Length: 125
Image (cartoon, rainbow, N blue to C red; front, side, top):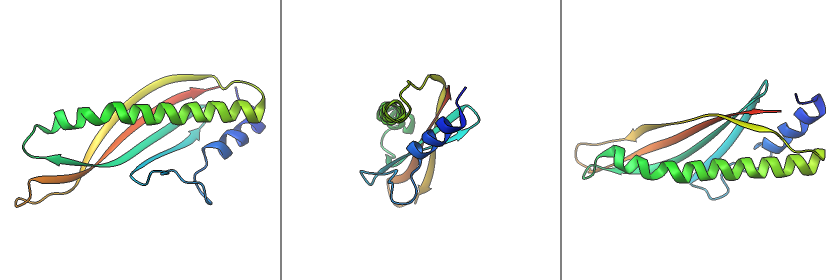
């Protein structure tokens, strides 16, 4: 169980407001929020789906980079938490899931823009 001080420090680490960027590269975003002892991490990027190939094959190629981005984010969180508190943050992976939302489509254009989202939940202590 995290102490109140540790919760505050973890909140400061995952905070992306007031000058802290969730999207350092400009085309992907990784954000997080803490609810109780569950840390929810969200990855979002814009992808292009071409109608020449099946959509599920194109989406499969985005899962691994999204998971790597989330894993990199969690590594940074664990490292900063240890630096701030002097102890390791225990993290248990609860689930990963993803979704695709088409944001632009036209019968005259073969490409569609879509949001690719991956959500991960971790139990922290």
